[in-house]
Length: 150
Image (cartoon, rainbow, N blue to C red; front, side, top):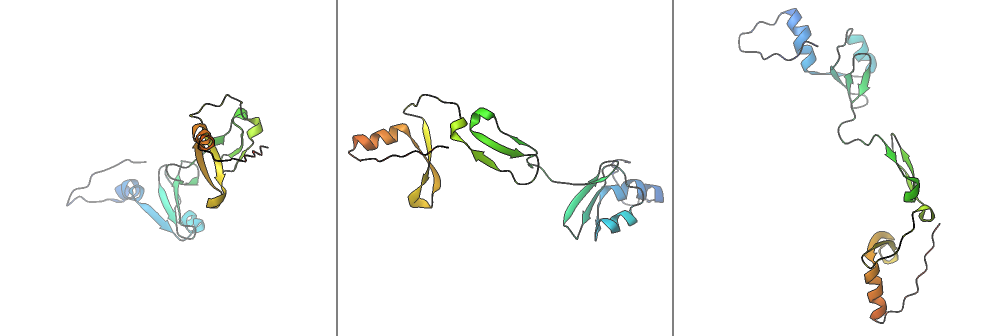
């Protein structure tokens, strides 16, 4: 790649400058990869193109065209065996499963947070503390608590 060049009014652009600077400082647009490959006979590392058929932004890495996935893409999810989580992925949609019986055991403290599915709110995940549950009992609320862990 030729790099970057600052142009000023009146500069002449010869064929070499055009091929070295101008074509590498734009995003070329093509109907599809076949059109791109027939039009670009000698791609340079760092060139970008946009494929209209798939709405895909691609870059040339010096040996092949690659889709630009953008910042923030998750490239890997790994779960620890003691976390109670299983699953993960290195691409696509991530799936995680919770197996509480595999989680590390501990002693419950009043400030610990407990997650639950709220049956009155479409089973949306919510949280409470052990202290909040204890307060219900001292307020005279009768609780029937069933925990099903798998």
